Image (cartoon, rainbow, N blue to C red; front, side, top):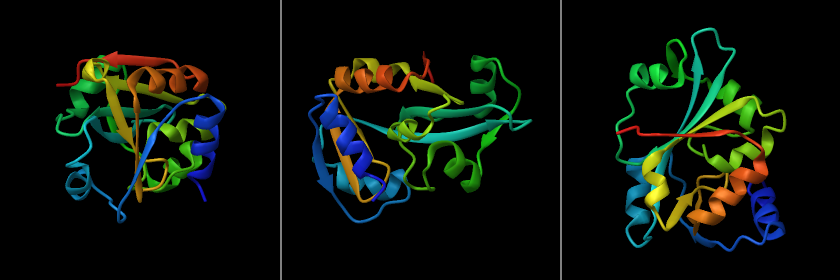
Length: 162
């Protein structure tokens, strides 16, 4: 079960979380119905690659925040960005489409994926993400999420994406 590693790591780090189970959801639109009672920063998580395919990005944006890939490429100082293929997603984060999550960083031990997070997340008290499967949502304190990011060893860039 791919999410088991997430729960084990959060427990090991002493990070408290709430788990909300729901039917499989592949898009933000499908997930919104299940988020109605969850008071947290909800995100869309985008796995992107540059034109050459030699740099990959995990972009965490507010679920209603439009992400202009051309503008984002300029912000990160890269050439054209596009969505990474399911094969690249699996190879770099160990995830499948519909289950993209920052928790996939546990599978990127070589730190090849660059992390970009919407600066609006820093205003949230609680954040919500899939535990690497799209049949549940985990809710945790933003400070604890930042502790997870620090543990991952990935450099994180907070950018204004709206």
